[in-house]
Image 1 (cartoon, rainbow, N blue to C red):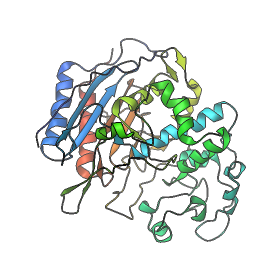
Image 2: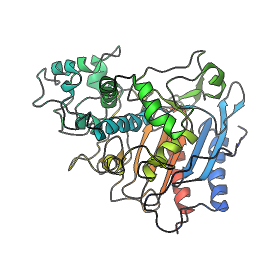
Image 3: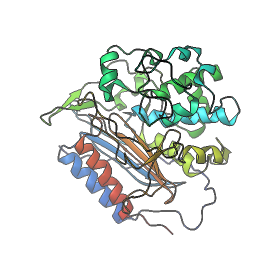
Image 4: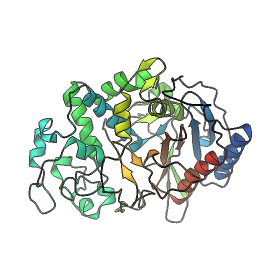
Length: 400
């Protein structure tokens, strides 16, 4: 496969550092070349058909590159403007929406979900009994409610063969008992709609996307932008990648837990909001304390638990850091012991099922996203690209 690199020429929105001390982090030209060579080699080997990646500090881009083909059959190159299905990278966005409403006193973190969605009074545990206490907004933000996903739990896979509503599925454990990744953020999206009186997509556009200049982030790819969307690939058990052509009409269900389309430049603006304590340029979008809360441990002594798989074509067990890492509101939090050559303790991250990944490292003052479009989630080769890119980033990062 011929490697194709398109340099980033778009300027990222300028954000004002909050309490920044000393020089901003940077990556020298030699480091940018190393990152580009690594990504180019990964595509040349056929590890993934396309990848776009970006590293930013609080106010500028440190590295950006796009390699491979956004449409292999059509021989169309990936570019900085290539749009990806970011799937569960939607979750931190919806979590931010909830925290904006909390900041305004319109949603309480310890409110029972039934306050906003009365139908949750009927939810039951696997044993068929009501939970010992109601599911709260906090439970949803931390994935400790007991709500799961059928693709990662055999019990739910047997019960949910047709996309049942969350309230018709049992809780996998008592609320607050443990971390279980599930449709929690879909419910948060419903709460946003109920409280705001707007559809979720309208709220996100008005309160987050438009203020941050995220013009290409939406649940719909307009017809005149269809050619920018990357195709999806599935890696079979034999290791062969199969391309799935994009449909004529490109839109996703409007859900809080997934469905957004975006590109690396747009998502970088979202990540910079967290590096800048809630400011974008001269404008405050959200309070600094609110973002600090989102990025801090909200599960106490619990840890992120490895999620099994009930569908290996869709996802392998995940995430890295299971058994030690914590969770905030919408983010996994890196904790000690931590590899000193990688992201710092206190970094927050998450990913999307098509192997789109990001992390925000407030200690080092950088954030990065690596977007691919391959199933299953945690595909070995896609994961090696993420971790290799991360390691080279920190090897070449200059601070001060």
